Structure formats: structure tokens, C-alpha cells
Image (cartoon, rainbow, N blue to C red; front, side):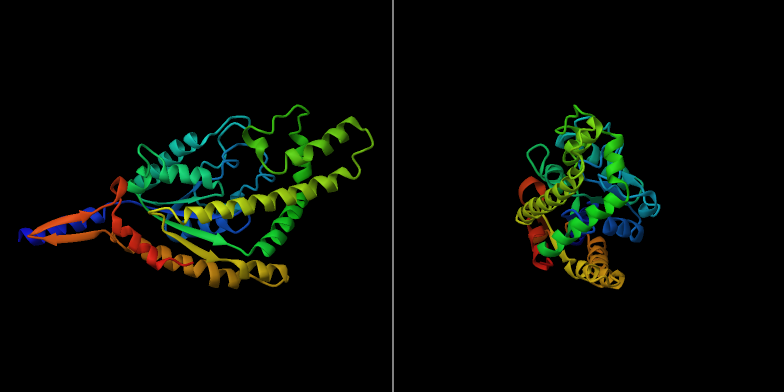
Length: 322
């Protein structure tokens, strides 16, 4: 009887670890859409992990999701920080951890989504002694990835769309000749590149005519350069212990878009349905169920690795989608 009770106790412990979904990916790979759909499907709330979008201001240039796109899903850390304030990785870790705890306390699923992978790593792998977040939560990381050639095309197309939606007017309205582009929201791609054009326009020096085209081209180039850096960081994260990262290839979606063809069903087939299934299984599986429950001489032991994370969680990596 003691033997059975020990196993039952271990199982109860295994089911008490709260779960968190992370949606990773380079800019323009569909992170927000996936995160919102997951939140709707699994009764969750989205926690923004984009270090620029935490700031107020410039919604078009920072590409914040609109109220309509949020589909009624609660979002945390999306705005609320002063435009000129420094919001460090430590600030993000504190605020994001608090948001995760609040979402869990409301009985909902936290879905963390954004492109600031350095901040995400600080949250997940940081803490006293490192790995405190992974020790406290069972995490699943979904990585939306796209082939570089199509991502280059789409990031450029998206910049063109941002121009149509008011990028130039938004930059003009917030323009300051002495602006500091190393702090706050002004670090956003799209603001430093517009500076020379807007300054020439304000001074009416006659040189502004061809400068807008140059500025837009620089925005496109810098945006794609950012995606290359983001993908490199995510690839490194996939090598870290305890990070169960599942790569989801969304290339087919952008291929359909590049052809001017309907892409909704393609997104459903290659992104949504695989992710929905992975999250369903993840939520149904007891937290840390991969932990090795070793029964010997009537005793139950949990084989654990560093920072209290079960070593056998690495077994989950065997099921990764790469």
C-alpha cells in the first residue's frame, strides 16, 4: 500500500507544474496570429515579448496588433510603457513573470509571443542560479519559420503595406530633430531610417524629393537583417537544455501569398492544425511527465537535473518537429 501511495503522490506532484506556451519566430512569420488563435482555442491570454511593442506610441511602425486582430483576447505588456523609457531585460522578466502568474491565477493559459529572443531567454533561463522559470513551469516553444527568400519578399511587402497604412504620417507626427534613437520606442525599425527625410522636409531644403524612397528601402533592408539575427538566436535556443522547441514551417503560406493565391487553408493545414495538436497533447500530458519515476525498495524517487528540472524532460525532445 505504501508503494502505491508513493506512486500516487509522485503523480500528483507531476501534475501540479503550470504550463506556458511560447510562440517564437522572426518578424513577419505569423507569431501574433498563431498566439491569438491558440489563446482563443485554449482559453488563454497573450503576453507580449516584443521589447519595442511594450512602449506606447507608433502603432503602425511597431506593427502592434489592432483591437480587431486581438479578437477579444486579453493582451499583457502591449503598450503601457512610456515611449522614451528604458525597458530592460530585467524589467521584462519581472513584468512577464508577474503576467504569467496572473493569467494562471485566473485559470487561463499564458501564451507568450514576440520577437525579442534575448528577453525571452532572460526570462526562461535567467533567475537566481539560472533556470528558475523552467523549474517553475512546464514550457512548450512553437517556432514559426519561413524560408529566407520568401521572408525577404514578405518583409518588404509588409513595409509597403505599412507605408499605405500611414507609416510616413505617423513618423512625421512624432518627429523630433534631436531624437535619441537608442532609447525606448524610437529604437523601432522605421523611425531612425525616416530621420534624414523628415529633417530635410522640415527644413524645406529641396533635397527631400528622393529621400523617402531611400528611407523605405533602408527600412526593408534593416527589417530583413533583423529576421536573420532572430533566426540565428532561435536556432541557438533550440540547443539549450530543457527547451522543447517545435519548428513549424510556414513557408508554404508565404509562397501562396507571393503567388497572389488564397492562403487561409494553407495556413490552417501547415501551421494551425499541427500547432493545435501539439498544444492539445502538451496540455493533456502531466507536467514534467517525462521525469523518470524510479521505484526501488518501495520508495519513489524523481530523477532530476539542474535547477530541479527533471532530467527525463529531455525525452520530450525526441518528439520535436524539426
